[in-house]
Length: 592
Image 1 (cartoon, one colour):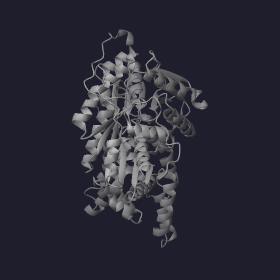
Image 2: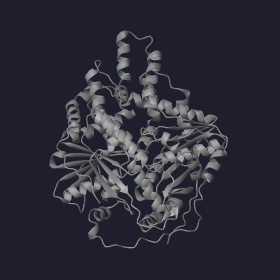
Image 3: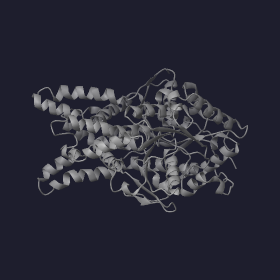
Image 4: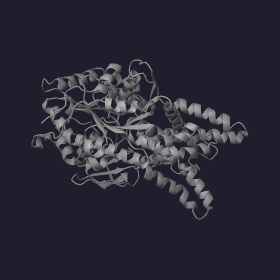
């Protein structure tokens, strides 16, 4: 089991959600520690699960990992970083300025962009080198899913450019002095990212077309940012050891995907990690992965449930009964939200309903899940660049019309700040949801952390709009009530029958409930247990899935459907309709 060769002081593991970034980052960090290196493992993901993989309760300070001498880990908590950043900016003025002025300052730091810059504030200090990292030979970053990672890595240039050209001393984050204090740190972070002697970026991809396309897009965009020391880590490559139909189909799909890899991506130095039936959660699993010869083979546990390919028809029937409404697929990156969203949309459209299928995911893959036109179905994407341009023009036309030259210049400066994108995208999200008044709108949402931040920004949005003197559209005012209305909105939580995706889906469900949104159903996707495979390796993975399917059915969800792993990739209307219909094999043939 080859791991990517990490020799530089800093290493980033990035890639499409669900490709195994955390697993390979943890395994690489443990291997470096076993070689006598002092290693700090850091997650910048809002939906981090480092605690679970390392079986260690982590905070924002380096915490030793029991059983792995030399290894420490920490989580960069975006919300905690934002709170600390906000207090650092506002705190000195408490007791000095009137209470109303303090409240106004706190409002200026209430937007979602404050969360992002505060998280980067912590990230940049680690990358630029501070007392925290001084004690370590290597700092390994288990980064967030690709869309978030690219935004995070582009922040040094974005904020540095904004600081360099802003002449008014104001920004959406309040006085620029708060950012200027760390300008040297940001500059050092930019320099470290582009230094091949200091930084390695590991592009993690599974042997699947979507993951490889995402890796190529990331390779290109990082190179444009000046980050060119890149390695490709192919993870979960399966080679069939039996004539089982599912095993042969999986091996063939992996081979075809690797043969069709973009040329520039294929030219990178690469490592290749095989298929791990039981995943890499827990230190025992990591040790077994790193030292397979030292592990005594054990029989897989027997399956305890029946698992058939149940399809989505019961859920689609219930959704259709309302005649219109919003459907949102949510969950950890890589669980198949795009595929489930596309299957629901195509099925509703084929039943004669007007359907809008769209995405708010920065790494949008809808075009690949649906490669042909379908009657009654409109496919779109909320494009941040287009929305920012539209929003800027609208605010300048309305709020800037009566301003003098200096005031208009200040407004234009404010609208150039990076958080303008979040406001603009949120408006587009609300407008898309508004179409569900007389149609079905199916949203393929972004990975969990991004989604929750998007939801949380609903009320902050009103304050941000007030800041730029724009109007609050009716669609925005109605958004939260609509999301909380079970007759209007149906959330499908998509997961895999594995430890981390299920646990993260439960955290997502708890977050939604705190926001007053009750999930409609869970979908357990890509189940090998439901596929009927008899291949020894894949059957072991199927048996591993059984307790997680049981947990979803009887503990986590009020209603759940299981979708089998399919030999034919679910691309195109015919394959998506087959996935929605289910019944790939008979019920009651659960593996023993």
